[in-house]
Structures are given as C-alpha cells and as structure tokens.
Length: 101
Image (cartoon, rainbow, N blue to C red; front, side, top):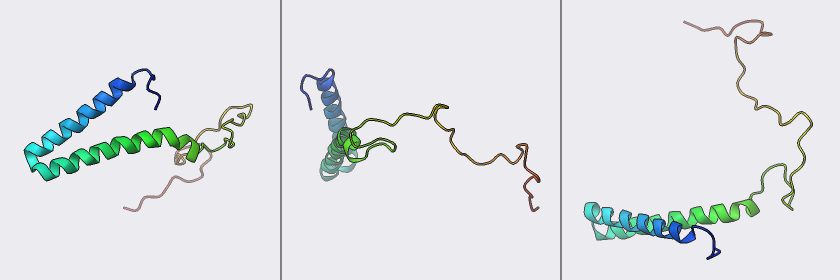
C-alpha cells in the first residue's frame, strides 16, 4: 500500500468504522464471543478483498493477454458479439418449438 495514495486514509477509516460497527451490533444482539467472531470475519473480508484486487491481475491474467500485460489487437470488425440462446421466432428457423400441453 502506498501511504501517499489519494484517499487511502479515508478508506482505512471507513473500513475500521465498519468493523467496529459490526462488532458493536453483534455485541448487543449475540454476546461478546460472537462480537469478536463477527469483527474478525469483517476484518478478514476486507483483507481478502484487498488482496484480490491487488494480486488478481498478476495471478489470473485476462484471456487474450500475454504475460507482459500487453493485449492482442482486436480484429478489424471489433469484438465478436456474445453468443446467447437462439430466438425461436428468428427468421431461418423451420419450425417453432413444440410445447406439450
């Protein structure tokens, strides 16, 4: 973490506030042991989300990119459209789907 990153301390304070709030609410509803568990799980969630956002790009590169991070060029026609389910009423279909009923 770069300590000079813009908004870093605000994000850290908000996350600390979320942890404290979750612990206090659990303390009021469930007791001290559950409050510690909830606070620990909240911290663990924040740490795992931070690690995923920081290291996911190096561990799981996007498809179509080489190890150097440089992307391959798109074909001249642009990206291909996503292939979804076929429309049964689209022209070119011989028979509509049959429904048993």
